[in-house]
Image (cartoon, rainbow, N blue to C red; front, side, top):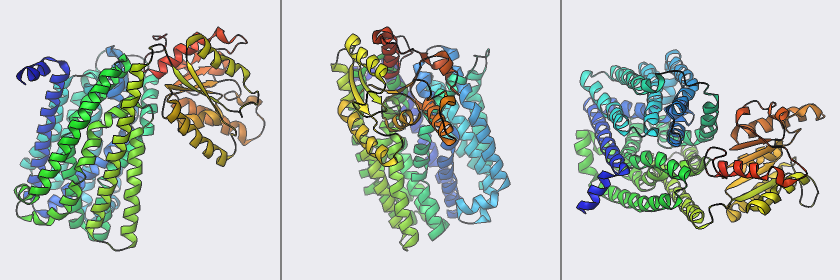
Length: 603
């Protein structure tokens, strides 16, 4: 055992894990102490502080548009400092204006926001500092994620402890007024954010950040609904109960959610370490190593979640008595019910980074959105049929249980995919080709010729999917079910869709694997398309598909110029009567997209 521990400490991953666990542990202790200090000011202040912190957790991810996960992932995949800096600068293009807008709204409409958040307009003085806290922690999140992507663990963990543990506690020590505490916390978070980002912003200009801005938005925007759903899962019950049972009851629900968040924080180091590590392993082709890592951490996370839940359920009374003092009894029953969700929610928090690293599509976001739908249905029932606070706690538990199960299901699928990649020949590529015409129609002969050349000349496995209609919603819905079933059975590395417009947008929105769009002519150049609405709508569909696609091919330079964005990322590849003419270039681009590497480095 001693040798294993020493061996872990000698490795970079071992040291990273230890540093991160220590930092997250200290941050959790600091958060626990902050709530204890709030409780010492009285139950009313504790309930208000609980709602404030839950609101901060709910809102700040919306300002980032998925940039926290995106920066860590992309920076970990880059080696040159100027490339990494461009991602940080690119994210600030939208985060700073959104942060400014949130603060301005909080200053201009304090009473209206107080009514939504606290259940009445009487807490309007808390709204401006709340808005500052939301904006500041969003900016802090960018700096922290940038440091983690570079694997600068010492400064990243240091500012984590400072921001989440030291600052809130220090604010309560310096003032007994909750409004002042919130102002001080927000200003301190803003100062830490500037300090964290300053090294990344200093130095000579790194050049245009348009490409990096596009990559971050393409990766992050589809994840925004999931970020909203994650915040809403642990915050919406607080707002719902505030409307039906008042501030005290909402504080009880909010405190239960806070305990759940604190328990899940034990597993956040797994997510923090797994995202850059998993992204690096995927980029380097270490599928066996990543699979082994996932398997080990899966069982560790489940075991730890079970132990934590059992301890709390058996000792909730003394734990909360020590934590909250004499007012603890009002919080015990609801906290016990909500804390049963520690097993599924802790597992989700610990392993979600694997899905963020592996999938181009927001797999976690899909699972979170479904869990939120369950919660919304239960909340609607609570509004229509008078039910006790415990009903809302039970609905939240059901939602979290679904989230944990869905994460387990997807993690198991990723492991089977990694095993498949390990066992197959290194040069092989599995491609699904989408043709926007019925099978046997004779349309797109050059597309068929090129796809067949990929199989004949380069050993690719090519499976065709035919889109029988591009105008009928019912046919498209049926086609989506067929396409999803094909992806499960064929298990492709990449999807290649010929022609833009409806077919490209359909594929981008339906595929769970990377999509390369091959634009052929009037799908981008709409000058020859007849009608009034049809040229605009079809062209708009092409542009949206181009924005979210993992790779782009155009047949001419002139066609590429019709794109609104990403022109410098397009591979120009003419379709020839001789299909072997450009099959090598097409294969290189498809492999680069499929295996997360710069185009042209894999052949």
